[in-house]
Image (cartoon, rainbow, N blue to C red; front, side):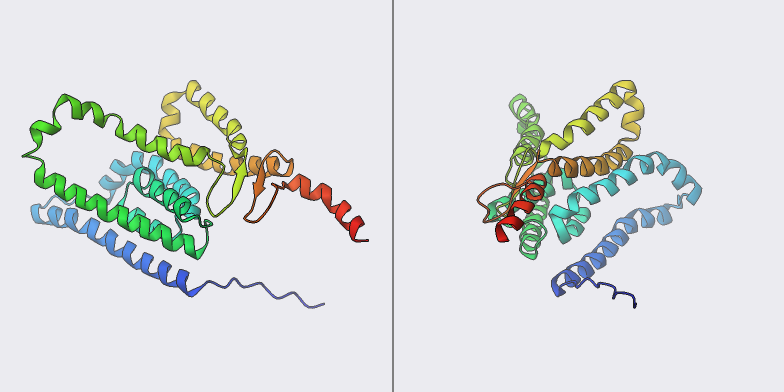
Length: 265
């Protein structure tokens, strides 16, 4: 018997163009980021050696490399190809990801589709441009507005900006509607065990936990996946797709299959 043909995945022209453009812009951004400090070091003759760079960056690499990998794995399914511009402009968790979540919910599109990718791309781009405009205005008006910005009322209000931002993001995380007409109920049950494990590890050794929090995230992602899959098959987590009248879990589908076959017979 001959071997079966290997299945080839067809990538749409849209994704090909977006990924090619994203790679080009990422390389250009890295070159620009490195150009200024390199030029300054060459100008003043203070260029560090590779050994000095690695020794200084070792602590940051241990924390941020696994954290970056975990963020890519968890955020890319939502942000799609717009993750390129998000990584270049920065502040993904605080600004770009909430913008992507809100764009998907407002447009009511399914995550992972070309429509969602395009809408999220526009939302992230507008978020990036808005951020740059606000920063530019802030730099220009920093000195004239210094008495106002350092006043007690403004300082008090500034403390609530970040909690309010994460609070609005949490509403989307805790809700059942994930966009595109897809309703997932009881999905947070899968996060209980990983959350307990992380809390226990933090209580045992807080310093070690904060030093390797990136690795902690990498470890909990596969755990969360397998728990979610198990709970879905057990019927604890239910999924309603667009057009479905009733949420049907994996266990319900398995149990109703024989009845359906008998009905057909």
